[in-house]
Length: 290
Image (cartoon, rainbow, N blue to C red; front, side):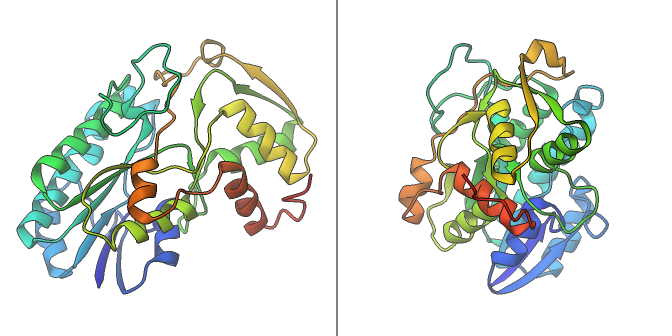
């Protein structure tokens, strides 16, 4: 199978590159800017793919409030161009989306299923939901995969994630303030890549939630990072209001991944296990210690 991987140098793209079998055709932004429709319609067919995976995205949640058109171009129009091209080629498209399509259900305490109505709160979230809708409308053979709290290693420089940020700040400062009223599920890029690899072996097209098992807050996630890494850091819980981010975030965006588990035969492992594996892989010798 020839697989065109868009966003190959990012965290998920790097994990997919290591996991996928067959002929991989990687595309970074320099090779293919998906917001350029003419370029997509020209370049993608020349790669002769049997499958296209879109792991590229505009992920600057706060910055999107000031440049919503840029977020829309990459997160919505780009996926539309990919979907149109895949439909014309009659090949499947995997498009990765986000838990941030939810958020306006105040007081939510149960995990969202694929049938729950979205309610995005900010420009980034709206652009991602629009991308989902455009993909689902333009390409019948689609896998739209929503995930949450993604972290992983990236081939390209400057690709940070929450785990690396916490480790850096913890070592530099010895104390960190972390939001404790936003519930999510941290998800390993390695585990998501494995789920996608298993999903594309099926023809069970549609919308899926894909996260590690369980849920936590960002503050409790940070505490677990330091515990496993063997670092003594004073983690101070704060509220979303105290943090003062420009863009609104969901207070609860835990995703129910049971449909994915049924399709690929098993759920993703608990987020704590995935985190320990990630820390071990980056050389934290104390990872896994109790």
